[in-house]
Image 1: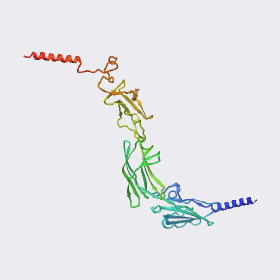
Image 2 (image 1 turned 180 degrees about the vertical axis):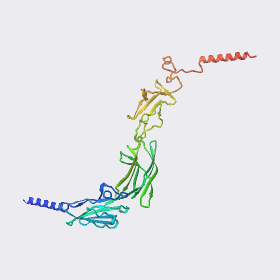
Image 3 (image 1 turned 60 degrees about the horizontal axis):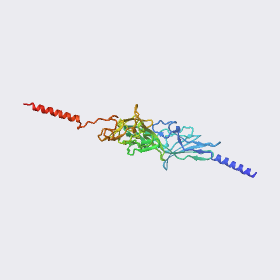
Image 4 (image 1 turned 60 degrees about the vertical axis):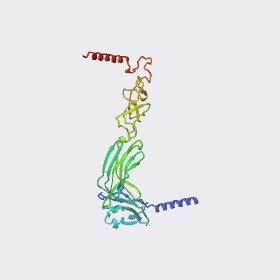
Length: 383
């Protein structure tokens, strides 16, 4: 029986504490999931309303909702609303820019100015005297004027970019360079920025002739990217504009270069057809022949292959069956093409051996003697 009394006591205490702690106030938020207030938007319930989310326990009633605006450690504005009298006159920076006719405690701005950027909190007081307030939340007023200008030049696995941002208030945060989807980060950034400060406090950023190269050491799925935004004082980045540029060739892998070995040389066609990630592009033709000072030793004197872009392997040209290893190259010592033999290999000159004409040939000597005799006869006949 005593145990039951203890349990009942704690249940009643928990219910009492739950009722006492029913009021909760969350951080203020912008309507329609906005991330900032746009200076150039027409103020309205859908564009310039700051909401005060709070929750009540059953039976609790709101006596008033109050707002405070802060600039660092200084309070720079207040506003109060109650269910009976509605909105009361706002003060300091909020004076004259708050809709006093709302039927809830929301802070709807009727004008937007640069100096309305700051930290806001809201609080709720109940008829039972209980009070609670939210933490401070930074609200940005962002002005984005002018146009973005970008100029790009594409080379062989390279890109060169010139860029100018619009004028942005507050001073924007910009990131630009080569971005990898694989790493989800910039792996090479633009480091030299120029800044122009305008009289209204906005800032324009630019850079010129930023060049980047893509090669076999670059990470996967790369693009050139510019991300412009604004940052809150806690470091939270809010993106305003993203521009992405890429080329399909930047992520292309090729067939590995054919190794020149065993006295064999390789020529590619087209000659400048390398893939950005290394090797030769799809359909590149590789012609393999013996290097200077060497000659084919067998029936194969040339090998032609094509790069297969799917398998990234070299395959014999269509209609051909010979491969790199089928070509044998030996030193060309000026003999008859039988690897240094004297031409009498028992095959009586067959197997396609080349004929060699020598100055010492008997037939050629006889011809010279005959011509010499004719000349002497001609001379002797002269008067």
